[in-house]
Image (cartoon, rainbow, N blue to C red; front, top):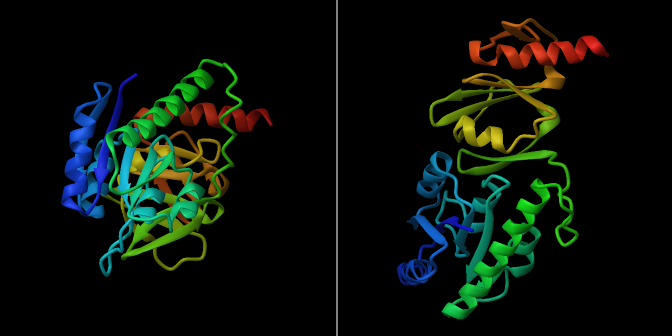
Length: 249
């Protein structure tokens, strides 16, 4: 098994040690090491990794800390947190962290954390193959989307979202009753990975809609209140399938 990984840590020495450790493990592939959370997020949105080593340190004013950064990662990515004490351990494990390591971290402790990661991903592969994995509990259905906007982490209930518009490296999230959309530094590919397919439908390279917000639709247009959204040509087959399911009810 090969795992792609990245590092977010403000301490240059700790980051350097982690890079050395990763280089000694043949099945780990380092994709980046960052001190700035926003720089790390930009790189992650373009190229997600499977395992993230995240430092827990006080955030600079207007920045996000390691735990907030973890909340921005897509579900397939797992986190190993690094700290100088155990004060944040319980909160990190509530974020489904694979491990929590206190600095300085020896190579043997690092390997134990990596072993947990390989075991976790191996269980996920077994589940994909239809084999039971009793050690991994079912994940609760996602009900809130956490996004960074204007130096804040906003928790947006999924049922409030009407549709999402992609604008290059940013997205606009349009919600019920809101006078203006929430703007977040996030690509459409990444935001789609964080939304449940049962509730959301991508209709265009620039648009994702919540199924429950659709008022009317054709194979070329989706209507949400007084807003008409185009259906991209490559997505029309999917829309036809969706319409046929609605017709069968």
